[in-house]
Amino acid sequence: MRRPPGPPPWLWLLTGLYLSQVPATVTWWTAQAKDLLGLGAYPEQVTTTGGFRALLALSVAQLAPTAFLLAGILALPLPRLRCRFTEWRHDLRRPLPGEPFAEIQRFLADRAPGVELRVSPTRSDLTARVYPAGPRATRIAVFVPLTVLWRRDRAAAETLLLHELGHHRNGEQHVAGLGSPFVALLRSWPYVFALCGLLPAGLLLVSGEPSAHLMFAQVVLVLLRVPEVLLLPVGALWSAELAADRHAAAARGGAAQGGAELLRVLAAVEEADTGRLAALHHPPARLRRWFARRAGSPSAQLLLVALLPLALLADLLLTVAGATVAYRLLDVPWERAAGRALSLADHQVTAGPEWWAVLAVLAVWPLLAPVWPRLWAPDGRPGGRLSPGPYATAVLVPALVLAVALAPWGSTADPVAAKAPAPAPPADPVATAAPPPATDPTGQPTGTAMATATACPTPSPPAAPARPTGLPAPATAAGELPATDPAAVPPGTFRTARVVSAEPLLGTPRQLVDEVADRLSGARWTLAADGTLTDDTGEPPLRRTGGLHGEKHTTTEVSATAVWTDADLRPAPDADGLRLVLVRAATGVNHAVIACRAFDATTTTAGVFVLELSPTP
Picture (spheres, rainbow, N blue to C red):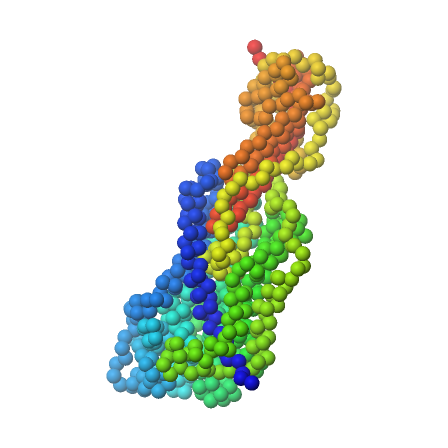
């Protein structure tokens, strides 16, 4: 039976998924820019809050991956333009006549006819890198350390060049390689994330902004952006690098002899090709040494094929964990938060293209592998083979995940809308983020780090909030006051003489109750003949329906607010005026969509107020 081939071209799979989402990405960022620049549905009192400004800064961290990915996609059909830029950027030029460059060029011509050599006389932190010079043309850049190594240990230098030719035979120089915007993303994005993501969130939390504590859930999601953006590209790059190591080992004499030679090379260049965040685009030296020792073993072969599916699985688990924690920070009970997170994961797996694409590529790769190298090199030949066992095990990863997601376990959707009460000031109605669908490096809502075709939600008014439970009756809320006859209150106009007391209910912060009391302290009241009590501060009219009750609902394009007031009005026992006891509750639900994420904030304030009213002339 024919043995299955080596690992699929995961880098090209990711590129195809990114490319398929370019239209959705452009549409998404256009809508986001309108919202974040104040041209959308959000009023000025929302866009001027600290929480909204923090979200604006966080969006820059989301835009950086989008920019790099679009640049990488645009560079694919323009390899000659990328070639000229790369050679200018790294000071690459044709090699001078003489040794060792003539020997290096002859070696390349023998192993990969058509591959050209370029050298850099100045840069000394790299050894060799491959990059495209045209649709089917490739060049290898050689830097000072490799020329030194060629004179000192030619066999080791040849192994390094064979590693780069391993990338060439799979066409990976077009996606990765020297001058790749995708690799530039991995190198620079963590710094952009720290500057435009963590720093604004941290400053908001220590600034004393009233809405700051509402950002805790968003901070959790922001922190998870690091692994979500990096996991899949890193997994694909590591698989490509290990496969290139395997190609070099096979070209040097098979898994055993070539592996020993590769170990010696890794030791010789351990100080080269390193730097800050180098592990994001090259596997750590320890992992490469482990792989070189076991290149022919089932465990190493399984790692080679399963790196991307395992990265996809890790991304899914991080999304579930982060969503659960973020929901919990919005006061959603643990069981309900976990249910919502699992429902989100189920949708991500089944509705997104990533798991299906990985499974499809693994299924058809044994048929495509023999012709794949010929797409990039005229003399391309199928590379190393893998044992059926490791390959079948790698196929099981996406197959089992999809099977679990599609199984009729019953709905894990949370039956209650995501409007957990948060006892916080309604100063920033978009400062807290309900956990969004998992996002790609562009921030688009998907099941993984790539975008799906799922439509971006649009701003819309939420459902009217429900009246809070647990509010006391006004007649008993201030039971220490002497009782009088409410029927003895005559119609007329009154003003608030003083606020006797103001006590919070339902865990409302004292500051918010005091703000309402301050507003009521200057109120003017009118008691009509039918018993309706109104004021000039915007409170709902209190109508006599068994008692005095008022209710007021306000709805905008992105919010719904309700105020409920129960009152007890009767003559004051020790004065000529009236005693008014108010049990007041207000709930606001704000729904915002920023960066294709639904941000919900629910705030409830409640208190009992005892006022003395005096007649006005």
